[in-house]
Image (cartoon, rainbow, N blue to C red):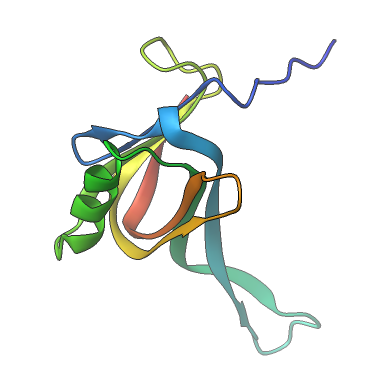
Length: 134
């Protein structure tokens, strides 16, 4: 069976009411599960138990003057905002599913370089479990 790769440009990323995928060059969703080892009397090895699940989203890309306000609004919010991290084309059924939930923007960085292009990076911390829909 051939492997079908999802083109990186076919993605959706929404924070609150703002669609951000048009300015992204990369994005990473990281999910972590704290694994605890439980020792049981008489057993030669411990049993693994799933603990807390945490996650982060990191995105970066180019930013226009019109889009700076979207990033600043997301960063300045002191409440969690809804997000969608979709693996596939925006506006259609996801190629490989979508993650959705709530997150809070932890950091925002805006930078420029010699070719007069402004870039940004933004990190979000997930609030609760990332709900995956196939």
